[in-house]
Length: 442
Image (cartoon, rainbow, N blue to C red; front, side, top):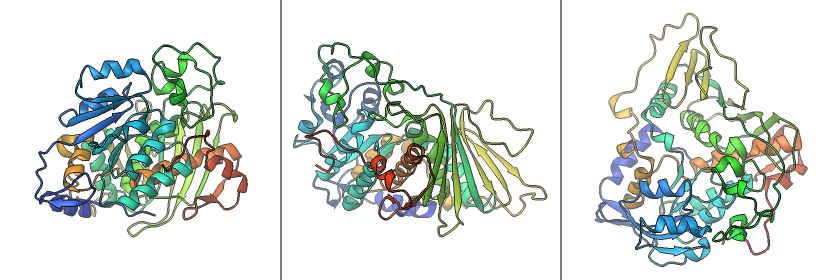
């Protein structure tokens, strides 16, 4: 399990970073560089998420733009006319003046771009999820750990910068509900199933072979590229459904508050298994070992129309489309991204609860901006709160549930090897097979 950043160490390392260190292109920490010096960024993936992501870092130097759809590329190039343009992200990464990469491609190529960029000593900000298989998540994390101290990484879970998230973490770690034993999380978004879609003519300007990338070849259909991720991430070869999409955001609440890492088991139930698309609903369960400040905990997930039970009959989840319920021996904490409610158990008046001291309050992200936190880390060598160690284990856990769903049994998981020790047949789903010419660790 990778080391997690707690409140005290984050304050300490953040203060050290402010002393005047930055990471230069070679990946070596250098003293005396101005944090005001602009970073040279390549934006890879310039469509629905890439355009707002680029805008969020537009105060820096955007020196390269890449998209396999020439129409997206032409549109964004009007905003950044001095940037060089590319169709193939592998060619883009060869540009010599790039220092950092912002990845907003289709989910099934995230791991590829992330790993290739880190192997070239580049800082990386990646849209969630970091990967599209358990194996990919592990490779992304391992590549980052090999380069830790030289590069800054951040997974794009922008809600992490909402101050309420930090307050939830403080309450849990300062004992507001006592010793935590479980957390139940949910997302109300309702996926749709179906089969791969019939062939249509490829429109001018779209390099479909690059869009498909390492996945098995499927003929073009306009539905795949229309309307954002909800159209394509329901297919096994292109995405990881709601546990990969909204699950990245919602699981982040539990990951931060409980200092979670790799689980030791996973089980998952859902709608009937399809060879083409992800389930239209699932419920999942993972077991996590104790760490230095809490005992073992169980993590539960519900999506579509499934919901956990509530700790009080007077409380309803009707208006909370996403959220989490933490259970401790002294009470419950019910929350979403902007709200939090403490429910003490009977005879617990919370008189023993002590709020954090001023020097233990978690600092906000710079200007409460997730992208700005990454930019600052690139320049100063400071930490980010959702680096590829933290987020790599989270995505590994989420995708492990889908493996348990496909094999139809509880998995005993060995975090050291990345294998299900009781289920050899799980291997076919833990790691993907790629098309000829596509290499993950390039």
